[in-house]
Image (cartoon, rainbow, N blue to C red; front, top):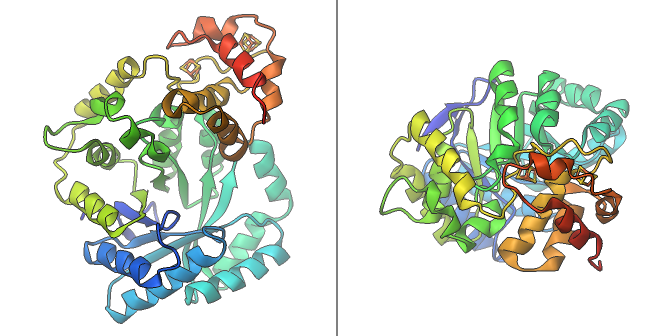
Length: 362
Ligand code: SF4
Ligand code: SF4
């Protein structure tokens, strides 16, 4: 196992983290606990959950798993999150979370899922930061973190406020170009960086031929290559994998245990090759993101990617609604000025794609 310093917290965490959002058999507690024990025996000490994974069952299962880790003397850090903003709501939530998890302190507590900067401002006006600081003083949490779906300059702006000790965001061989800017702030502010969704929501294993460019070892699977791509980023403290089965835990442990260091030069080459492999696919580079009508083009095109890769119209709408929180109706605002298509590094037919999205039936 490789361990890295989590920002300035003084904690050393495993660079492979356990994400508790994908258990295949959430009601089979023995299997879930066995998965956590297997990971911890392999050196994983970072465990991440949330109050709404499988309803409240995600944290309950973690509570049982953590008890078993303590019984076996296996060390761990626990990360979870809250959507709440007001002090009263956060206090109610954390009380329940601590009970479910069977612990007295949460190591890494996240302000959950900032989707845009106005949303962040709104939460601040409700006093969320003051409440988090009080929880820290009271010993209920150890570190103040944030999870975000922002991209590009926005995520950088959020982190440069300097109020967080760590950040969690999606990052993979599929969408890396959308969040490169975050690394500047992470380095400058020395904060912990946890990335999730390393397999692009299943896109990478489902499309191995497109993601061949991630491979640096001839005998590795595309899944191993996708994880090793993340391990190679020195700015990434923890790469979270949402494990579904025991087999999946073992596969990820193998990826880290047989990891051969990838140089910065190799990493740059991999990123450079992505453009050629992603023909027809929006890479999220954001060169188009200057629409006079305010259309969030990279987010719209990312949603359209889901159709290209999965072949389903409904995947476009789900992505817009649940991942980006962008109204489908934004696609109708296009005046066909052509500015975005001129800027597009992949020469995509953005205007037609927007028309397609606008015409979809929810
Ligand atoms: S063509 Fe449409 S989406 Fe592109 S910049 Fe112009 S108005 Fe915006
Ligand atoms: S539409 Fe083109 S320019 Fe815009 S983010 Fe996607 S690939 Fe980049």
